[in-house]
Image: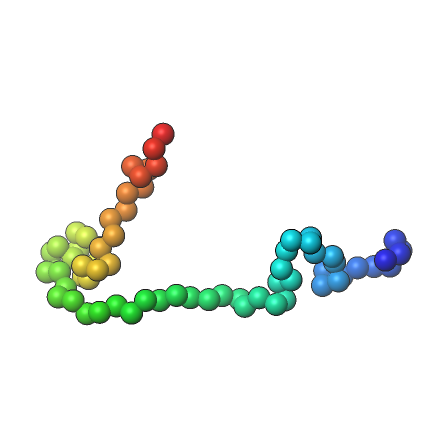
Length: 67
């Protein structure tokens, strides 16, 4: 392409190992089916942050990252 010819963003060359973003979907979600289980009692649910035992995934934060 001649140096004096303007290029818009859609016409810019992509690196050889990339995928043209115009060919991709905006987003895809994976949402597994959740079976209904006996919920926690209200006091326990409040302390755990969920009423569903299957969703009770404690946050480990920095404890999970060895230093």
